[in-house]
Image (cartoon, rainbow, N blue to C red; front, side, top):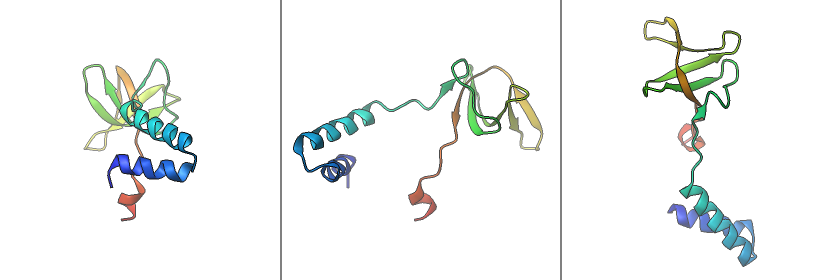
Length: 105
């Protein structure tokens, strides 16, 4: 089933009233065409304490780690299990949850 077919099916389940279905359909299409950028600017918002995140520097370097609220620092673990503070972070995003259909095929 294509994404458009899924949207149409959900619209019919949402309401039997055609104007509601049409609004649902076009709203879902608009949302697909204008996805939310998951990257947050550190000047606007910081992650929760010890929340697992991806973060990046202005030069494009990307890391996996966490934010330590007490230290006000972004931290990562290197392959040799050394904890490093990474400076110059500009953006971060939450690590997304694994989709249920992948976890429970």
